[in-house]
Image (cartoon, rainbow, N blue to C red; front, side, top):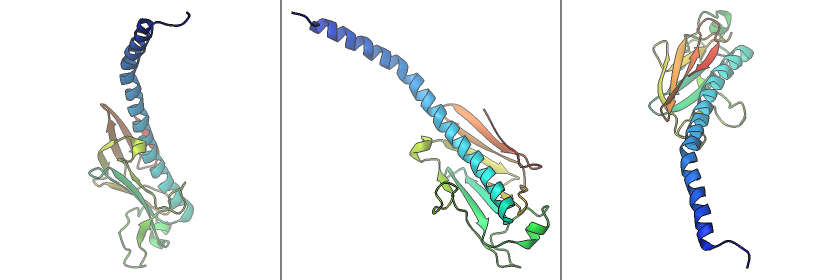
Length: 180
């Protein structure tokens, strides 16, 4: 009779189990790295998107990152605020502009056109990434004027599995960088 004995099959299965057990930590670590990189990419994309929308439409935008809730949202002025468009140095946005009646509302997500741009890092695609801090000029929001100028420099610190990534925005040119 040809074939394998029960002992040979048990030994092969045991060897495969050992290889799987040795490879699992490396696989989980690379999965954590992928989730953290995806979260950092989402933050930098939101900052760049808000800046481009503000400059392209002439309407101020705001990116808010709530470290306690691990969320991100992008908002836009509902109507053009002429004081922000005409004076790029005026980069602060109030919730409601008293003079014009403009209000701050959710911006449209760039890939899901019918949904507001809101992200939860507790979502499965980010694997539980923790937003450790978000600091933009003393607050958790950065505003972009109608010319696309940021109100302040700032950083967002993300962490998962012992690794941390920093997303930073420059206040002069609005350049966004991601670093470990």
